[in-house]
Length: 298
Image (cartoon, rainbow, N blue to C red):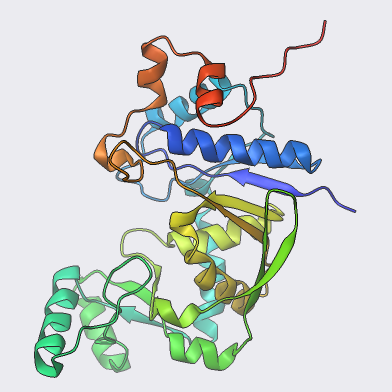
């Protein structure tokens, strides 16, 4: 049987923190215990926030932790054509549409509907209001006019149309630390008409990650519980694109002293900072529940 393939896939939009270290170490631990391969992928589709110095720091921090990964490293910004090809397949199926709405316009529409109905508008798993479908019924002429005016647009999946084309059941498997597998039912509908291609780049996190996992032969996805709900949408995209569905393990998050998850946006303590304070790799490993680095044989 082929060796299982794991991947750690950070975004170079800031320095790695303890949450990243935990996920990277857990991927490496699974790969070692299951006799698998470990890949590193740089998820840098955000061309505004991702910076070369942060990418270089990822390699430096992971090497400092004692991790090894296969080369070459896949950088998403070098593979936009792969995502364009995948999106073209979705477009051919007639299950995507242009969306010209800004976040404010969506928020205003939701507020109006809530005021009119007296009922709260449904939210997606990330807590954002489900898209109310404002642009779903635009005519071809209206789309052409808005596009010609230079107004930027994203592309959304028409969830009802997608589920009619791939009705399911949408199943995937979770695995635990012992490798035991459990079959789960995905619920893509709770994402509504999610954005599949952003306004600024020819993909989105959701589309890029399912394409990358398939192209790299990833068999086991190990990531934080903050991305657990994303598996519902990813399983649907995999079905629509004819891609394999990997096994999933969503680990607990590393929290700060007040119980919030660590985040670059909140300036959570970085590995660079603890390194600067004199911490050793083994101290970080022990703090996160992992064994010290193996001593090289002589």
